[in-house]
Length: 433
Image (cartoon, rainbow, N blue to C red; front, side):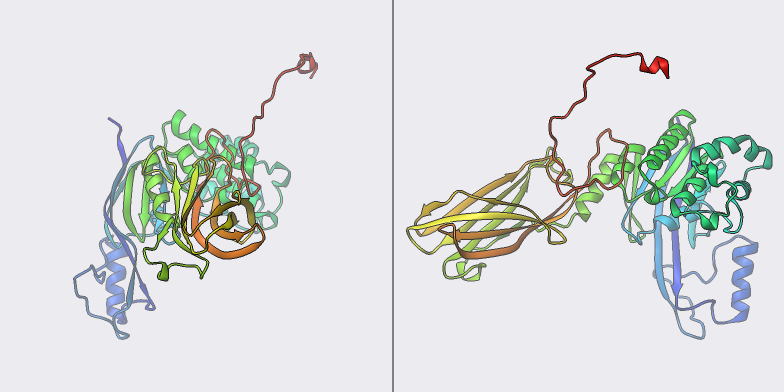
């Protein structure tokens, strides 16, 4: 059975907004002595349902960054921590890294921890890249001999060897994070903590970083905690997932299950509207819509919508005029209002009554992103009867499969066409090189 290297019990972190200190010097001294010297819980920490006297300025407003977290991480596991901005991900990593103390609860850890929580962690802008490698290494717990032993590997991985003696204040953000990650990744830590540092990297750097993290985790048996807003990167690298929402633990388990739950909860969708009374339905004296619905053809009911998912649009409307040639255009827009396509139906003669329509957008056609659909009902292919704008909205998540690049995929559409490479001629070029 694998050894537990991180154990979190009833972990909470609260911040007091608008007030620094308790309002009394004697209480501030007591707090400092209790929390800093004796390493005990803040005596003025207020748990829900308890009462603590307020200072001079009254009781301050409390912001719960984390609340009652409980989980265990075993040696060699790779955990992806996900959640919206402000969910408490970075606060949790800072507590595990011993940068800040929790307000309540217990956290136990075993082994050397290396953290990369922001671009250029531990760097001094006036020092060169060479000097900052040693400085950052010292801060992260390496000796001078260890840094020297790993120096060439760090420089080669970072790709900034031509700028090694240039002050890092002249580095781009990409160069900064390349060097910072290279130092952290070569420390041979027992626990490696990484917070959204791949966001500023290019495709080549992302591939190298993910490859290095896989090597550290799977080949060397080290533990990784990885925060990212790229669900493709999380699912590719991690085995376990932790979902935080407003400081609380929403879900934990296998990475696929947790990511699916998170995506389903965050996807903005207006997938169905229906009306029983024509007087209340959108339309006019010619047309009134009875129902519009977006039906995703999911392999599993709890799976999120992604670029592979076929989407069927079904609708019905009341037609109040007889012997009329009617067609409908289904127009798809991006969230920014860019028209992706306009698909017209065949023009058909209808009598008064209910008209039904259906159209399917195939999977592996649209790029990831947010979209909305508008339906336009047309008479005689020339005259507008009614325009139903913004009737359906949905959002598609990314999916990369075996592709190890996680930058933004170009284009409004992302079709899968037959496309292959074949060897048509053999030569001795490789031998000559």
